Amino acid sequence: MDLQEPQAVVMIPRIGDQAPEFTATTTQGEINYPSDYKGKWTILFSHPADFTPVCTSEFMTFAVMHDDFKKANCELIGLSIDGLYSHIAWLRTIKEKIEYKGMKDVEVIFPLIEDISMNVAKKYGMIQPGESTTQAVRAVFFVDPEGVIRTLMYYPLSTGRNFKEIYRTLLALQASEEFNVATPADWQPGDDVIVPTAGSCGVAKERMEDTDELDCKDWFFCTKKLDKEVVLNTLIKN
Image (cartoon, rainbow, N blue to C red):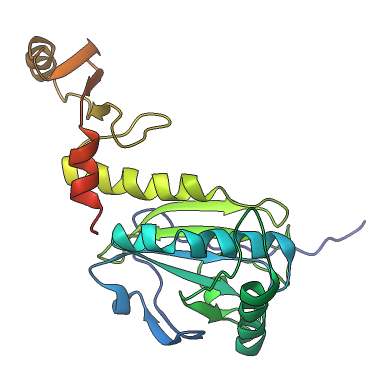
């Protein structure tokens, strides 16, 4: 009888957990995460390797959108299990040589973590043995200003991420918290939002009668308008 080696258990922090703490060397100096970022949203994301084409397209896109994230009170932090000098050389090559979809002379100024030991990658479940034991998958962690994980996204090595969706998700999380609402499928600032489901028939009846503000299709499905300018003026700081 063939005995197969048991697969390693991959521990992934969950939504609602405190983000695992670590200290790391980055291209922008040492960071203590998440304590250095208290009061800000952060997006901690991993990529498989430096000097690879999909990762290059992703870093260029994130770098071009960096100011958009900063205006939404969000800092970007990248990670791979490459060393610091590899990171520096790769980012320099991106700036000096790579042009893609009209993006060129792109400088990456957010931190890129050196994680040769895989210490951080393992804490965040970024090493997925079924995909690779030597490279991190494309993980994305949204962490709120109190250091709590609010959303996770995982992509395989072969598939580049949708950065417009990452930005949209950040604004949706912030809008839900700021206005005490939920956001429907494909929500964008300016779209109607969903009012949390009524907790009782009495509350539902009151809502159904509140036609000035709410549009209730049934007791469990009520929406209301949330002006785009109100959303953007609240969430985006110029």
